[in-house]
Image (cartoon, rainbow, N blue to C red; front, side, top):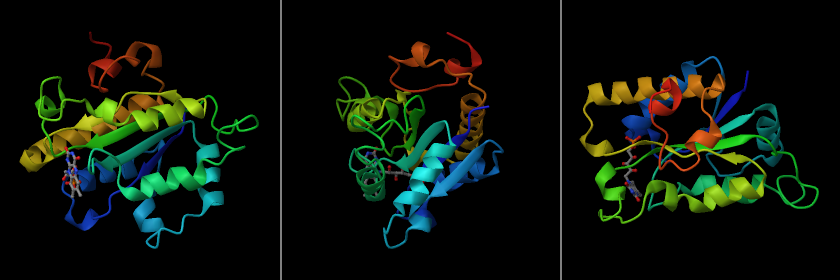
Length: 199
Ligand SMILES: Cc1cc2nc3c(=O)[nH]c(=O)nc-3n(C[C@H](O)[C@H](O)[C@H](O)COP(=O)(O)O)c2cc1C
C-alpha cells in the first residue's frame, strides 16, 4: 500500500480554523505520516538528512498549506531549496524521488469563482502552483492536481468538519491507489468524483 507523507506548513497554526481540522484528520489516518515543518523547525533550520529519509520512506508526498500571496508559506520554499538537492532529487544521478507522486492540499481565502477564468484572480490555483508542478516533473515524480478548500473565511464549523472528512477520504484514496494520475492529469483540482468513480 502506498505510504503518504504530509509535509505541513502553516506559519500561524494557533490562529488556524481550517488547517487545524485538516491536520487532525491527517494525524488520525493510519496510512499517513505528518511532518509539521514549522513545529519541527521553529528556527527554519531544516535537517536535510531527516527530510530526505522521510521522502525515501514514502510513495506519495502531499504538501498541505494555506495559499499565502498566491504561493506557499516560506518554509516550503526553503524546504525545496535545501532538501531537493542536485544529484539526489534531480540531475544526471538524482533519482531518489523518481516514480513517487506529489500533490498539494491547499486552502484559499478566495472563493472558487475568484480562481476561474474571468474571476478576480484570473488564474486557477493549479496554475499558481506551476513552479511546484515543474519541480515535480524535474524530479521525475508524478504531479497530481491540488485538492482545494476555497473561501475559508466564510466557512462555518460544520463546513470545516465536512472539509476535514473529505480530506480523510482523499488520504484514503491516495493510500489505496484509487486516484488514476492519467484520468486527473488535466483537472484544475482533485474532487471526490476523482476517487469515487463518478464522471
Ligand atoms: C499572509 C497571507 C497571505 C494570504 N494570501 C492568500 C492568497 O494569495 N490567496 C488566497 O486565496 N488566500 C490568501 N490568504 C488567506 C489564507 O489562505 C486563508 O486565511 C487560509 O487558507 C485559512 O486557513 P486557516 O484557517 O487554516 O488559517 C492569505 C492569508 C495570509 C495571512
